[in-house]
Amino acid sequence: MTTLPLSESTAVSVPPMPRRAFLGGAVAWGAGALAAPAWAGEPLAARMPVSMKTPGGTDLSYGQPSAQEVSVVRREHQEAGFSVWRSPLQHQRGIITASGLHFAVHHSGIPEIKVDRHALMIHGLVKKPLQFDLERLQRYPMVSRIHFLECAGNSAANALSPFALDQTLGEIAGEVSCSEWTGVPLSYLLHEVGLQDTARWVVAEGADAGSHTRSLPLKALLQDAMVALYQNGERLRPSQGYPMRLFMPGWEGNVNVKWLHRLEVTDAPAYSKDESGLYTQVLADGRIERFAFHMEVKSVITQPSGLQAMPEPQGFFELAGLAWAGHGRIARVDVSVDGGATWAPAQLHGPVLDRAFTRFTFPWRWAGRKAVLMSRAIDEHGRVQPLRSEWKRRYALHSFNHYNAVQSWRVHADGRVENCYV
Ligand SMILES: Nc1nc2c(c(=O)[nH]1)N[C@H]1C(S)=C(S)[C@@H](COP(=O)(O)O)O[C@H]1N2
Ligand SMILES: [Mo]
Image (cartoon, rainbow, N blue to C red; front, side):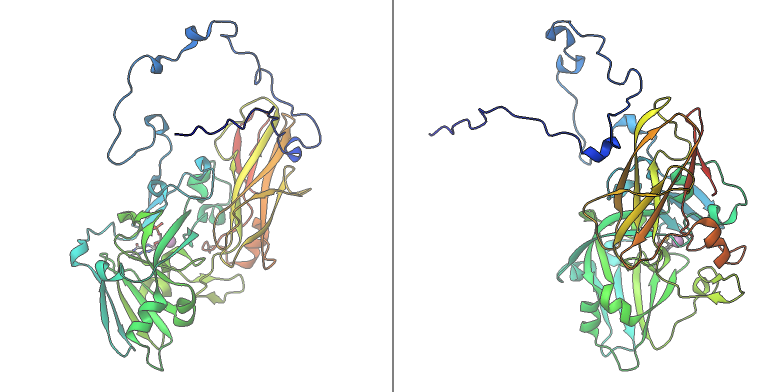
């Protein structure tokens, strides 16, 4: 046996925190933040945590978050008979949403699907209709991609309510999440069934009680769609469409049909109930927008955010947030701490992925006075997140889908943080 030489014998120096984290000076920590601990001077043995004195407990066969994190949960809202579970984005750090916290929208509840009795049928303007059960799909080559998913109606209250509701970020804008999705590109399956010359659209239907149905243009599906089987490395959760869902990166949530069981290739849209009503919207000039699939460029400051409190009466605070865009990558996020009077670029943290959450931070020295925090994302094509007033000018008074306006947080002098309109 040979022993490896210890190579770490030279002095080690600690790299400094990034300069820009200090806003050109020393960090103004609040009083007490760096005070000496109460036990300073005690012998080491006296400070041994209780947990080191007895053997620990057992683990679970499927892991759970710490019991002390019970407040980090989705909350259900019933809306027009739909069940909407919003993700607590104010607790998310990093670009992947924990699967158990992924937002969910169920129009007719979660169907109980027996995987051995479920199959995806592809028929219509095809040469050879086929059925694909999970076992069969499993044998196709798969791709993995990290993408956000956002409900068209996310942030609807900010669009509709004449005054800003005093709620958490999750309650206001928690109908968006980001996961790694793994599945079979739809083009492989469409290749297998063969398309007829007149094929232009695909009508996707879910196996739930309301038979959730959307028509999608074939050309875009061939480029980007997958039949997703896995989310964050494990089989889809029932909430996300177990055992299979359609996934179309960057497009409004409702086209990502869960519990997918039928794709009918057609020459025209089906004009199904929801796509003729709910998922159309009235513009300010009275025209109606339909089949507006892409979700627009958007960002939110996650920390601090609605109903949170600043941890110190004043001092250094790193603002953190998430940005995403349905047309591609995030190019820049600007932050304002003075209600939009001045803006400065935030730091983007990699990886900056196509149609995925991108994390950003912004160093701020809070003076302990009233402030309004805002973030404005810009995508790689130069699309800029609008102000609320700009968004409202584009749409009719009662339109609420595709709301992507800048989210503003008022920080009160006492440290309370509250949703506000600018
Ligand atoms: N079959 C089926 N698919 C569905 C829905 C549904 O109710 N039934 N809801 C849609 C809506 S409105 C949204 S926003 C997304 C939400 O996906 P998630 O629940 O996985 O977050 O699923 C879509 N797919
Ligand atoms: Mo949705």
